[in-house]
Image (cartoon, rainbow, N blue to C red; front, side, top):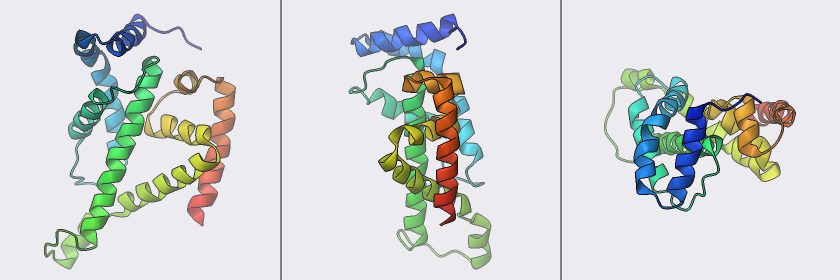
Amino acid sequence: MPMPTPAQHEVTALLLAWNGGDGGALERLTPLVYGELRRLAHHYMRRERVGHSLQTTGLIHEAYLRLIDASQVQWQNRAHFFAVSARLMRRILVDAARERGYLKRGGGTCQVELNEAMEIGDQRGEELLALDEALDALAEIDARKAQVIELRFFGGLSMEETAEALHVSTETIGRDLRLAKSWLRRRMSE
């Protein structure tokens, strides 16, 4: 496992200080994690449809607001912080996809020409919802394998960071990843 950089140690120290009630720790933490949160958000938004109502910056800010409100979370380290951030971003995008589905079925009705509706396309939103449902089903069977998928693909964490966040070896992450991908492929093809 690669040696953490001083910034990684500083993030962990600030998270622990924030846990301990140091309000100033959050202010010092923000500039250290913003770039990584932006990378995560960009990673998520790359998979979204063109013209998505939520942009990268909006996703970061929404996740950040939820992170600040996550006072019950006992931060362990940098990897744990980014794992929770990835999960929050996934939830925000899934909620947005569900809302689009609600609107598509007539909630908040407004008239749109057929050719305009065809240009909008909700294929990616539907795929995200299907993947979310499959991940939820996998989590019921094996929570860690679902977390591995979430951290690696939604969170963009490396194998080492994922292993650190889940307190297992990188070899275990590799096995879990192969099995989870196979299970999800089967489930999504049904």
